[in-house]
Amino acid sequence: MEALTKTRKIGGSLVVTIPKIIVEGEGLIEDQMVKIEVEKIKKSGFGLLRGMRSFTKEDELDAHE
Figure 1 (cartoon, one colour):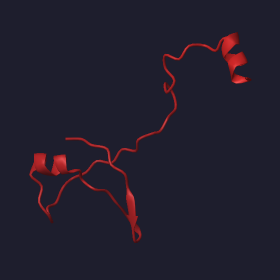
Figure 2: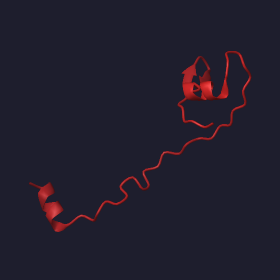
Figure 3: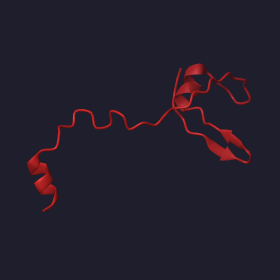
């Protein structure tokens, strides 16, 4: 299973919380050893405004009213 989660700082370490759906789906219990794989998620604005049309002369005029 795969999920996104944020890191938190506790003392000098970073910790992550395993979401409940994964805990239940994998049958995890407290103090159990698990293997994790770390992959940083890059935040990008690319594609954020996908499908937005070009500005027109009227849009520019409306912005200055």
